[in-house]
Image (cartoon, rainbow, N blue to C red; front, side):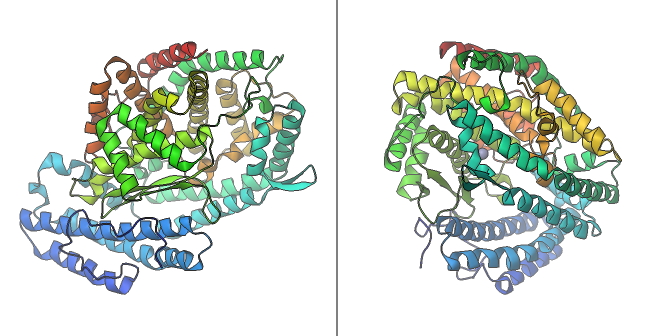
Length: 576
Ligand SMILES: [Zn+2]
């Protein structure tokens, strides 16, 4: 039974190393290929032999990667199929863990290879840098600590996911409660918000206990790897070669200085439109003019056709890429029973083709997701001709430039979906969302800098550090009577528990996307040309090069943020 939405996809490049008939879900069949690669990296002495081994290694990595992606796609498209679930779990439990130590061994052999110093420097600069970093950070004694850390992360997810409230006689999850914050009836919004807030507060000690344990483990992991604090370790482990803590501090300051005044203006406008004396935490998601939700389309086919038209108006290459995805059935977009929630873009690494999954129900959010994931898909298509597997993926800070730029560029043509009034309403909501998320990113990032550079802090000190940041980045929302909820708000942010320090990336990428958009206002063909050029580099160059190819500064300071805040502000003025 084929559970994939698409048919058999041809490999981009014919296989020369991996056997055509291999079962890539069976470790016993894969292991000899790793043996052969080790052999090649040990016996070959010349540059040509080394480069040939790297291509074989790339081919194998891509083939295994595609196998995992297909199993994941089949499972998320058919959550009701035990067969699909079993196949995916088998891969995660029995193939992936075997691969890790074998990859590590290959990396060691590569770094020790006698011909490596003769490889072209610029071409292998990023590749070598990544390998060296893996080898430098690896400590066998950290493996069990990382397993412990992952278990604590699961506890956090289990606790968060298990919380429910009784609302008007029905049990509801906290996620389900989110939609009541969009209700025009203010008393109802307050009731829903208070219920959720109280429910979380009842577990505050448990959240803090999990986090205390995580901090202890993380500090030990950093110490074992020879770092003086976990922050410095995490920067290395996340491959942040091209920016450091000082750049993040510059980002926090720039947001405070350039974005906060804009956020305060928007909050004041919202307060006036809602005719309130003060904006309370439950007044932030409702439409300030109490209008019904926008309805951009009835069926997914219509959404796809209109999105296709947007890309045709933007750029022929994008239009061609999106057309290919339709022809090859690389889209599974409509919400239906038996589909996992959410949306994602996944790259089939061997055929070098993108796939987009989402759950469209006819809301503006779906149009945004479509444009966003299409940006990721264009990135995958742009890197097809790159022979090295590792270079076909860019760092996350730039991947999100590809997707967030597409939201901004595509939004210029929202009249495909709406009257001009409604299109402007959607644009305003999008831009206000960008203004709102920057201070939250700065808060979450600055908080973690504080946490991991203050070893041995007490819970009270931690709470104070959070409150200081809320004062700095919270804007004019009145929390009186809910001081405890405000002081523990960070318990909601999954990244702090599960992916420490992983969040500022979205801020960095949004700055890039806004610059692409800014450039497109002056010269659209040139901005799009730069966009294509930068995407085609994949991960083959360091971040500053990727940004400059896209026509962007790679800096997160006031000098970068100020003109972008100005652009958002003048665009918002046009949308009144
Ligand atoms: Zn994304």
